[in-house]
Image (cartoon, rainbow, N blue to C red; front, top):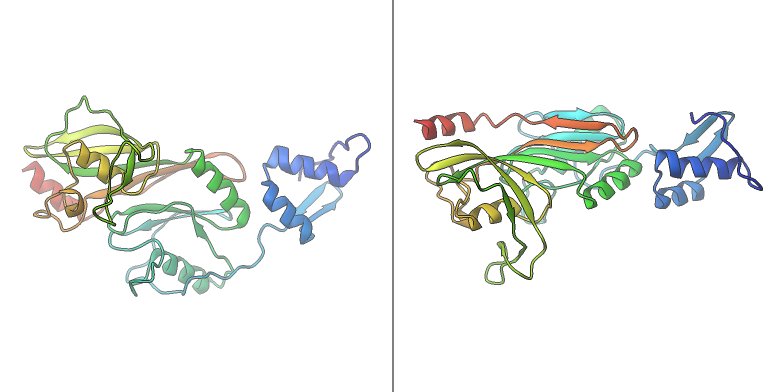
Length: 286
């Protein structure tokens, strides 16, 4: 309810409403054009009605997970769920195992809600942590733009090989494809700029626990940067890590932060460390 809107000279109430939508609400022009074409903007006195929640069906098959989906945050516009290690964010055509996208589709089918959330970012298959979804087109456009501007904060924790020098605080090295291995990335002068901030949390006899903050979001960025620095992730065989203690990379998304697409308020979501790390940490500390 924007209240009584000031009508521009020579204009009408509709133009005043559009100006408010684009200025105060930050309605993306693409969505404004779509709403206008579908008659999804209506004025009723001091009220402005927007058709932001048309029913949508997911493009993914609804498949129930082995364990209940962990919802870390949800409102009408956004959803954040925990992605377990070993689960892909969306189908890739090679595996028949349920992905996070299939699980989210099953969640809304079970609720009887015609909602089809779209993921805003991805995590590697064997990385656990929070994944952000937009529940309507308005949220998706706003959050995609925030992601492009690097305004969505992502913080990770990792167990790496070797004792990390506390002086290692930033890794600023471009990352590109490895022409000798289609699944790998590597530090390359011709690659895209990539920046990872490093904080040493604990050091053991031959390993370290670090907190890592992404300033960019390149494929395998943390894995490539830490391997390049001489500290591959424990369990990350693709980038030189030993699998003696665990068969998969010890990397977890600890927190996710973003500005709410409607209100602009800061939203911070925490994802507790995996229970499987308890035994791993005990062994390293011993």
